Length: 378
Ligand SMILES: *[C@@H]1O[C@H](CO)[C@@H](O)[C@H](O)[C@H]1NC(C)=O
Ligand SMILES: *[C@@H]1O[C@H](CO)[C@@H](O)[C@H](O)[C@H]1NC(C)=O
Ligand SMILES: *[C@@H]1O[C@H](CO)[C@@H](O)[C@H](O)[C@H]1NC(C)=O
Image (cartoon, rainbow, N blue to C red; front, top):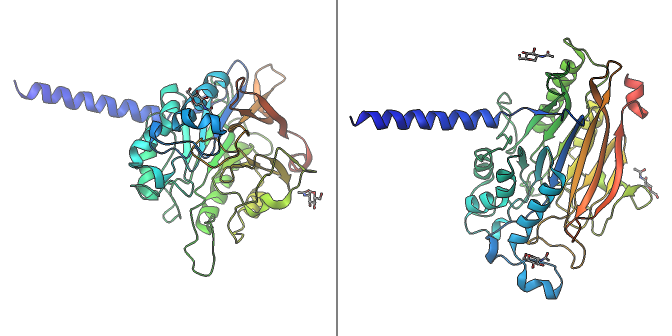
């Protein structure tokens, strides 16, 4: 008699586990009615203890009614308004120094994404490990949350620096001939926190082990894109998400970027070569970072757009009167001669401000098929 409930319990646990595992492996794919895939990027939430945590850099009259809960409310409004297919959190998800318990803060920070039932992913910033969990501990916790496609690290890379280096494929429209092909590749990297090399001050950087993994992954994806079945020409475009901007973000001024720069580019003080590695690989069309909350521009260098999202969180430094914001990206498929959906035709971006109407600004095309370097490769 006693064993029956135990067996039932085990069965239930097994069901719950496998249901969660199946959900965790949810395949990203292009929407069948619009032929689009829309990504919401949330940078620098800096979440801490919720209602108890005050806002930074808001107008004096806004101070008394403002907390981490305003960050939560902003994500909820954005999800309702944009209905993204995927949400990416690009680090400093929590502001560790002010978070009493890292796990609780992470749970609260990602709660709007989790409850929306939209698949989401996160990478680490430089502040995520400053509470009660190590960097590895934070990433492990994230990977265990509901609806996330985040991964701890690639299973086959025996040695890789950092936590949360992984890639995700976005397949063609279900039922179309490209349903099993990755038409858009998403790369996520851990850009580190601080240098541990005494002679090098400042922030961390993307290490050779991570670049090697990226290079191999990109080559593998490009091969399968061009191979049977349904061999494609050229490369499927890629997008890379991480926290700390590359030194190359400093290549622009207002004559050649879209958006704003109101502070310096806080990259590592050394250049570890990841930009060159991406140019060489050839598939990445845009890079999306956070870290510098008052910068929200996109500029193109050597065929790659380098984009900031702009600060999102209310317990993060900002500028009073300058709205918190988020970046959206939409990849659109072309129609083939036969009237079904083909490869990616264009990638567009814009930002939304946390004002009354969630004002959209700085819409621009980041990449179109058949232009510049792509034509040469075809
Ligand atoms: C924060 O949220 C409160 C409660 O909804 C609201 O009254 C206040 O205006 C918000 N503050 C900011 C700066 O958005
Ligand atoms: C995609 O893969 C599934 C499962 O392996 C298969 O049933 C289906 O026929 C494939 N579709 C195409 C268009 O190749
Ligand atoms: C942007 O313009 C500035 C001068 O206005 C120039 O020095 C810089 O090289 C340009 N950057 C790119 C990436 O074209």
